[in-house]
Image (cartoon, rainbow, N blue to C red; front, side):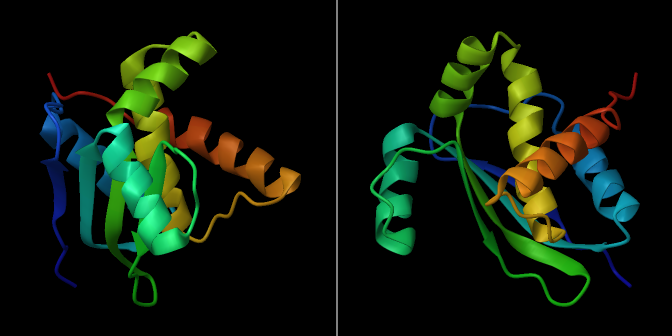
Length: 143
């Protein structure tokens, strides 16, 4: 089966460093969950951009760090993941962590949703956090 592309786009001034390391990591995470990589687009944006998407498509009148639109077919993951880099920076500061670590958590959170993990109940949230930690451990930069 041919692999789909993992793409990174920016609707603000954010630029992702080490893009190929992120692509490889997302691919490894997908594989580790027994899924196949289709086309996944990550769109980095600001709070207002994501707020408008939240309002228009989900009727949620709130700011958020991530919205994912899952277009997966069977075990092949496809979709769009919108991430507010403003919100990620704010959360990193609030949680006392580095921006890059919080960004990895949010990126992989979206991918885990595509893998079938939910986060509505307390139990689901605990499992999601555990999975995020496990998958962040798979990230490494090729030297």
